[in-house]
Image (tube, rainbow, N blue to C red; front, side):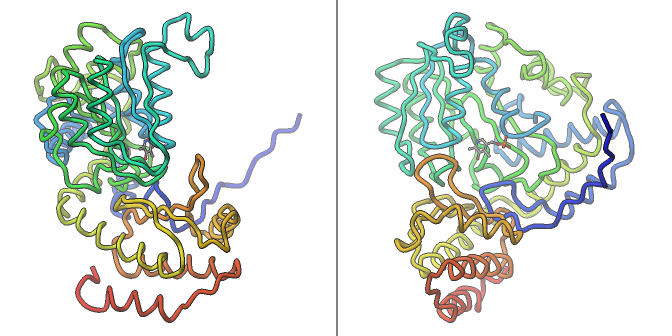
Length: 413
Ligand SMILES: *Cc1c(COP(=O)(O)O)cnc(C)c1O
């Protein structure tokens, strides 16, 4: 057998214009590359982690002591949040798309008994978990949550804040209020809303656990940290039941971030080998979020989403989403069925847009960290060219006039 030595891997610069990952800020990459070699117990690495913890509490508007981040991606944070769910626990999960569907699967995996795992190892049908499927493109409303919790009286309820599969904003207020009314611990997948939407965890007391990611609203793709936050009630439940994990047990994990027995301590103790590079990059991403301010950033997302939405509508597309960082659309009737072809043509040119990952097939275009006239105009033009290439009549003058009318005056930044 011959051993092949491959040439060094080169990855091109592309325009990441999908639901995520977003375009990582150059200052975040610089912080990653500029960090010195230092081990995970070196003083500045530990100080950086403690500072990250404080910045996370500020960004997320919470006094929850157990607010820190988990090494890895969004699913790492979600797995940590679901770790307190034990076999046989009564759970209600609301699913309205690809991601909340996977969350519901994770909950069935956590709550399944050994017999249920044995019967269907990759897709256990846990009798204690009720999954309420809401149609693609439809929101989970407070009404649906209220009715279901009243009927089932579970220990845990789950919902995605923003379902990135269909670009749908779900009713966080209604979910939290229903959880509070029924004494249920709410769990939220906030992977795509954190760093984009201006909201405060402590305004939603029905929610006991939150999980997010580094690569979407925080613009920090180099594998770093996925934020989580837990109320005292969640931690108390975990303390009572335990969890079938060392690495993703929030009580253990929090120690490296300087959180012990619900108190902040001066520096963390070993949980696992954290990377100084990752800490430096994540620290910079959080600093940039605070410097810009979430109020300003969330307004900016809404403004630029509106421009993209109106431009693709002018091209004959039908937008079905309501998420400020993402437009999900149906192509004009004459191009129906050619979504994959269009997406592949775009991707071949380094314009990274996405189809939906579950039925129905739609096109998704995102603007994570693309909040300026130049970036959004580039996305609009590339998409218009791709439509024309498939034989669609695009009025480029009309599109340029639309961009000029929106950006010509004051919202250039
Ligand atoms: C992106 C996303 C995930 C998965 O995050 P990864 O970083 O890929 O692990 C989960 N839930 C939602 C709502 C998402 O948008």
